[in-house]
Length: 80
Image (cartoon, rainbow, N blue to C red; front, side, top):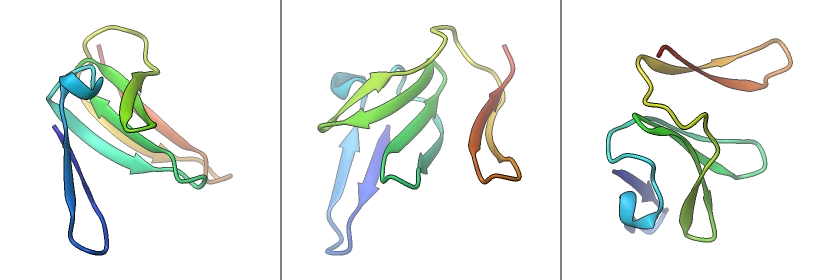
C-alpha cells in the first residue's frame, strides 16, 4: 500500500484496487517531472491520473532499491 502526503496533511492510500502490482511496497520515488513511482513485490508501477500503471518486467521482485548515476538518473535495482 502506498500513501501520498500533501501539505494540508491529506493522505491517500493506494492498493492493488488502484492498479498497484502488489500491496507490498518496497520504495516510492518522485522523479524530476513530478511522476510518482512505486517499487512493489509485483513490479515497478507509475501513478498516472490517480491509478498505478505497471512499468515492470512482470515478475515478482526480491531485494529492491533505488540508485542514482552521475547524471542523476534514478534506477530501480532488484534481484529475482
